[in-house]
Image 1: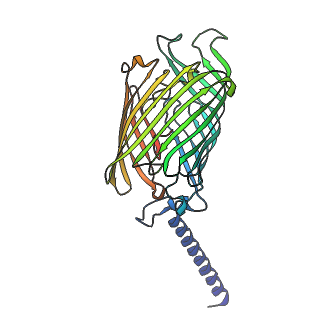
Image 2: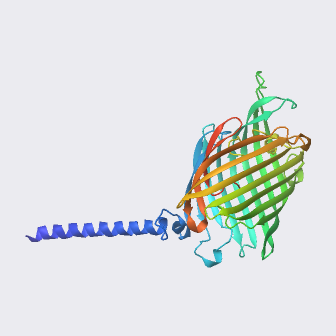
Length: 380
């Protein structure tokens, strides 16, 4: 064997060794980041606990009010669950997101949820540009009757600061501020040139006193505990808006484990607004299977229950059903109940965070709908 052949073989063996080492290195990195050492299943906990900590979350929009669409959210987890001081605390996450739907609705936003001073202080805020294309439905007692399309287009921001009143008790008090400056373009349905659409620049701004009880075991996919919030607020010109009205809303989510692999959840949302409330800000029924803003009124409530059964290892099946009403006043209570329900599945994607992901299919009074769920379907 001549020296040239030997050198070629040595180079080839060196290249194979380098590729093998690189492959092992990449395989080890993937295993450390995305494979659970406990059961060998796909798990993103290692990745979220790493210094990288970025979780790309595909956004699949199936909201019937805006049509199918998609986008991407990049979430950065600041506190790692392998940090002893971070155990049991509300997560600190920053999110950058953008999305577009088939009817032309789009948004771009940056948001942050923070837990500070060992969860003594919580902050939630976002800046975004929103351009939804929606529909509003007026009844026989309104000036107009039927379905009317409208566009919103503008800048929105919200900031909330909560303070834990006593260290040992999960009760928080604080305030939040909301501002939305936008252009409203409304299809009137009048088939006369120059009257077919109505366009107006408007601002919505208000301040809420906010109170929160949060004893959930985690904020992504809770299995036990209660989260209950109350907001009492004033939207007014002196906050930067164009209209004046009062707002009160409450939300309560209770989670009760039934057995080692069976978990139940219960939800009650109630909202009322009085004064010069813009039509797009009226309370509505919020249920899977019912389009956004389909049923609106000065007052609304939503009741829902969801049950999850851990069927096999990390896989679970869920079932849910709910009902609600949107009313001019509470004298109409019980006269126009709308119901929706469905089922879906979940996969435990990040064990350290208790984060489940999955898909739900629901049926409302008029349509079928489906949506991708990351964490809990119940929020704010």
